[in-house]
Length: 363
DNA sequence: AATTCGGGGTC
DNA sequence: GACCCAGAATT
Figure: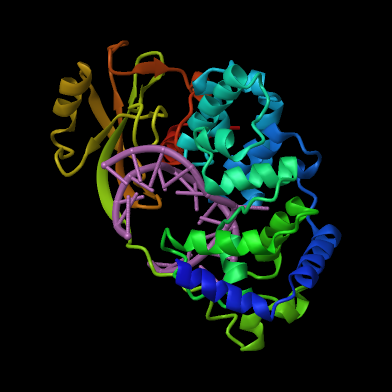
């Protein structure tokens, strides 16, 4: 670490921090996109946006952000909301623990800090779902405090500008970049500096084919000077996903209601709802009705086979064989029958929305 | 340090 | 297919 820090200081000897700050911040002020969370400096809005933007593109977040702020405009509104309603607002955005942790943290802020988002490293960093990046982003953007906010963009941009060859897939890499930002960051406008680095990564200093000819800090970039911009950052590959086969049944009762169940409160898609699903490694189609009777206490009559559903997560792949079924029973402990209009009130993960669409095309 | 957490857009 | 995205929590 000390060696790498010394290495950084060597790089900074022929680096004009003042000019770099000016070029970056001036460009950001001129070219920054007009985004809903840039309308003001409300720390709650900044906070919500930063959580939504974790591993998620700006274009994806925008409609969710509008709906979320309309539904939960304040800390207090989100604090007193039902978790199911928060998950419904998050439906389709993914990484649902973000939503649950955000509400947990908002409740903490409401109770322990009188509804004011903390403006210091210690208190902010203790909040659920607020890690090193989000902490720095909120402090710098909402409060103007010079703290590093190192995300994927910042690592890519600085790896090129400073020719840092550390593997950015490794956890310890972030520390190197945080040390670099602490040296580089503008004390006058840390908000524009941090956002400028990220905006640069999103618009100019892109992963592939960076637009160096349009770059406001081209003359500061060591990688460009050596023609190495396409070689950086160094990033090792992750392992590929494992495929999990499932059997799922859409069970309809006499009233035309369908059976759904709530997923466990921990793990994948926690507390979301789904159609009953059996591990196809343990249950065959022939055994499905028997398995269903065992699990749900309901006799079903299997009907037609629907379109199989394939869904790719970041670490696994679901391949679901989907069957239609009818039952005369109306109740079960393990789930609940809901009408096709009421099912819209339940947060369903995208793969199960794909199932739903096969029996009910929303208007 | 490695794994677990979603989903969509891009090439 | 592979890669990437304003990452954090858990083990």
